Image (cartoon, rainbow, N blue to C red):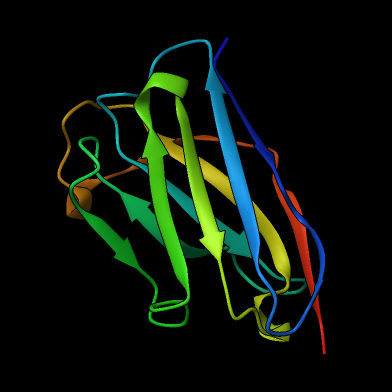
Length: 124
């Protein structure tokens, strides 16, 4: 059974930092793109960041560019989201996601596996 388990969420003051982790189990995702999404209360889920299967390409939502960094450790089957200069509008449940297909270009990814989410709350 494939599982994506997020951790690292919590309460932080504006301007602070957090690092989210997403540990995958049940299969390896070393050949699959992975990403992070978020959903704030009363809003639709939105894309935050993605990383290619090789780790050589990344993409970010405009709202987080320059503040968030996505990375992966294939040996640990884990993807990370380093978040800095956090703002109250970053408050949301953050979800990890993975593409079921291998070697997909980042622009063509369809995320089919999802974690349960971790809450990030940024106070002003």
